[in-house]
Length: 251
Image (tube, rainbow, N blue to C red; front, side):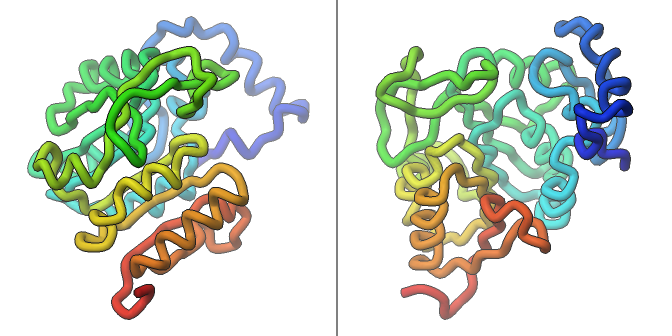
């Protein structure tokens, strides 16, 4: 796999490679060029070019593909435009299910569009953020227009759901795997999923944002019996982890 992201945009080669990308219309739909989603259709303007180039988070994708199995239930929390949603859909197959959570209207539009143009049938979309409580909250849009997080100073009002409530009320099935990348809201989301984590032990792919939140997330996870492993073996990205339940850990 060619990882274009590893070629610096400050190098001559990097500038040459990226120059034609700026000329591609943002509304254009292109097939993903490489990786596990090769051949799936993607909207150019829905995110960075490495999505459709197939070089996005190559190490994380490899680990994700090794864990997710046919017939499983996967939660994609912070689904953005649906890259991991599509990948999880492919991995779990027609007998599995993916539940994608995304609160930002622009991302929801692209997420649903990607499900439509790829004829995906095993994905349920929740137009909501995931937090410690159920209700409404303000959502602050990120500087790139595609990311954001819950914030009292946010420009948009969004729905917020609690994973423990969704599972206990049987609104979603018990997940086998959770991927969570929500721009600083990780601790709140995990706090609202303590029962789910304690009793059902889904594997968790977690991206944290900030040292304080990272440490508190690790404390919570180890307290309910999870073992923490850096996503990349050389630990170049300590904020990217895989958490798996191990008997005898925690209290």
